[in-house]
Image 1 (cartoon, rainbow, N blue to C red):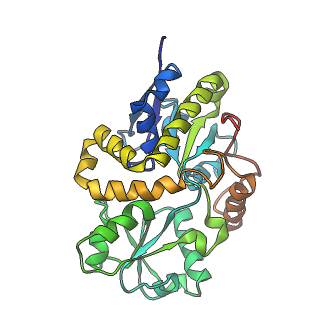
Image 2 (tube, rainbow, N blue to C red; image 1 turned 30 degrees about the vertical axis):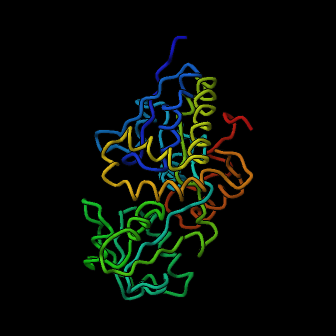
Length: 306
């Protein structure tokens, strides 16, 4: 059987958000569909969204929040999320001992990645808990990203990360710092947006819809394998990404946690709920950061076998 190579751009260095792709490669699921998956990270500091727009990648990992940065500028941008990789938003605030709940940021320091939407999310999370974001000192995050070390050294008091990676990294650290973690979705329901997501260029999908369906069919099997056999899946990830072997305790712990979140309980991997998707963009429209994002934009279940 002739195989067709497809290109997947990651949003960050390979981690347990991506294990299903490597499990699908290792178990031959893509090969069964006549596909050869090439996984890479953009090498020019561009986001995967840019690579999709330029047709330099067939699929890319991003998140609903990141897609909004495109849609507030151009609602007709040819980007669409075609599968959700987690059942809920597992991102939140990782803090040092000074912050025992979000409102404690009042009078303390938050390290930002510099995105307006990110800062608005943190603002509303802190304010929803009774704090005052106007009294929070905002500092830029260092280019060398080591939040556990930075928090222990009190370079800042909190930062926006994923629990199943940096949150667990803090739990496994040997520092004497008492870390805390708070999911933003627990304070503002609209913040249970989809992250990460698998996205594609709509023009590419129009030309290669059958290929996208094959890709998603094989990928779903890979994530199902990682869900059922998390420790074996963790070993697969480390085998394909040798640098991760240096973090074996973290990778295994992370895989055990994230494997419970690849799909909703008794739900279908990859499927989007329209109400949940639109709730976040309704909140974003209230922030007036650009053009209003119309309803029912930016996602589709069309290429999944529902």
